[in-house]
Amino acid sequence: MSDKNISGRGQRELRVRVKTAKGRKLSSTLWLERQLNDPYVIRARKEGYRGRAAYKILELDDRYGFLKPGARVVDLGCAPGGWCQVAVVRVNALGQNPKKPVGTVLGVDLQEVEPIPGAELHQLDFLSDDADALVKGWLGGRADVVMSDMAAAASGHKATDHLRIVALIEAALDFAFDVLEDGGTFVAKVLAGGAENTMQATLKKNFRKVANVKPPASRSDSSEKFVVAMGYRGRELAAAAAADDDADE
Ligand SMILES: C[S@@+](CC[C@H](N)C(=O)[O-])C[C@H]1O[C@@H](n2cnc3c(N)ncnc32)[C@H](O)[C@@H]1O
Image (cartoon, rainbow, N blue to C red; front, side, top):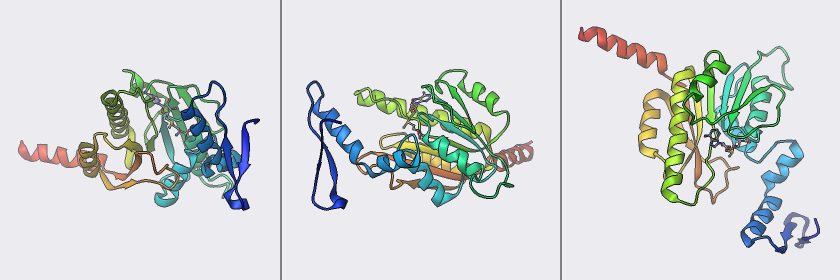
């Protein structure tokens, strides 16, 4: 790269600086400089992950352990594929005991995703009318983990962006309620300004444990955080509701 200088004194302080090139906006130059110096971007390149986002799910799973060998995982908004790459390794216990059960990873995204061995990938707008039915068909049963890193491209119009975020989280949660196995886990990116209170109340009612986390790989200047809701109580709640109905008759 011709417009790259290395500055700094010691090895640890080496920082790539990018000069503003003709035709490139200052914001793009700053973005490029941040990418080139981001330790997670550098690590992802070295370790073969498709993006720094991989470390967010790695860190969440290291803490909560939901990507168990044999688990069936649905990854919503999976492009370019970092979360899927992590999930494939963990649910198949690759590099560990070869006798461990085989898990599945199903990823969907608006964009096309380059194939990932061990994952089934589909291009789909998850907000389209038939999305739930299509994904359920591909899944062919229940899931142990539904995870969503879906984020709509910013329109610059605050109210519109807010509505889009809420729609994506609600769609992911509705789908999770539909397909999760009892005891299953829902992981989703939420942004400050989303439908926070309503969603937290719904999650607390339907899952045994709900954590709100900002993993170290999530940039501190970003308003994103993640909810990790574990121990889905779907059948237990349905049974309790049915028992109430019987008692009322
Ligand atoms: C932050 S990226 C996901 C990164 C991914 N977790 C990874 O590790 O590579 C957010 C993704 O959400 C996707 N997305 C946004 N709206 C969507 C929708 N309506 N349906 C499906 N995917 C959507 C975007 O196309 C984008 O690829």
